[in-house]
Amino acid sequence: QKEVEQNSGPLSVPEGAIASLNCTYSDRGSQSFFWYRQYSGKSPELIMFIYSNGDKEDGRFTAQLNKASQYVSLLIRDSQPSDSATYLCAVTGYSTLTFGKGTMLLVSP
Amino acid sequence: DTGVSQDPRHKITKRGQNVTFRCDPISEHNRLYWYRQTLGQGPEFLTYFQNEAQLEKSRLLSDRFSAERPKGSFSTLEIQRTEQGDSAMYLCASSLVLSNTGELFFGEGSRLTVL
Image 1 (cartoon, one colour):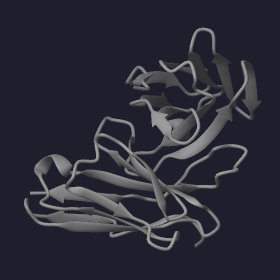
Image 2: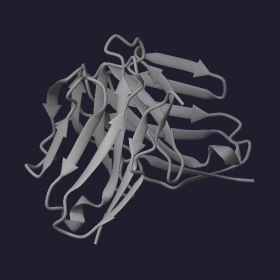
Image 3: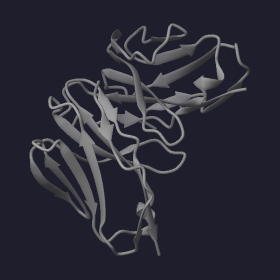
Image 4: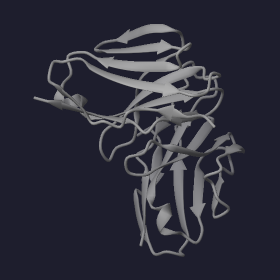
C-alpha cells in the first residue's frame, strides 16, 4: 500500500517569504514525484515534477528530492497571495499516481 | 476547448438512486483515470484505462461502482444504489502512456451529493 504523507497545515507565510512544503512517501519503488496545486473548488494542476535526486528549479518554484530519505519538498520563493491554495504531493511507480492529503498554504498580504 | 471535460458538473440524488458520470479525455491521450476526492483529502485512485482496457481497479471501487471506456475514447463511471458516503468530487484525468512527464490532466470534476 503506497502512502504519501503531508502536513495538512495550514502553513501561513507573509507575502514575499519562502514557503516550504514537505512530503514523505513509503514506496521505495516510486520513480516520479509531482507537485500539484489545487485552488478551492477547482481541479489539481501540475506545478512541477522531479525524477532525480537533488534540486529542480522552475521560476519561483524549486522541487527537492531525496530518495534515500524518501522525502520530496517544494519551495516557493517570493510567495504571493495568489499562491494560496492546497499543494498536493503525488508519487508514481509505473502507472498510477498516489496523492497525499495536501498542505494548505495561506499567503497573507 | 481541448481539455478534459466532465459531465454533469454537479449531481444531487437521493440515497438508493443510480448515477452516471461521463468523461471526455484529451483526444490523443490513451490513458484515462478516475479519482475520488472528499473535503480535506487528496484525490484517491479508483481505476484507470489504457485505450479500452481497464487495467487496474482500487479496492475502494466496490461492486456498486462500474466504469467503462467502450471505444477507447470517452468513459463513464456509474454508481448504483448510491449511499451518503459516496458524496464526493469525482475527478477524471487523462495522460499519454509515453509522456515524458507522467503528467495527469484533470477535468473540473463531477460533484456528487447524496441526500
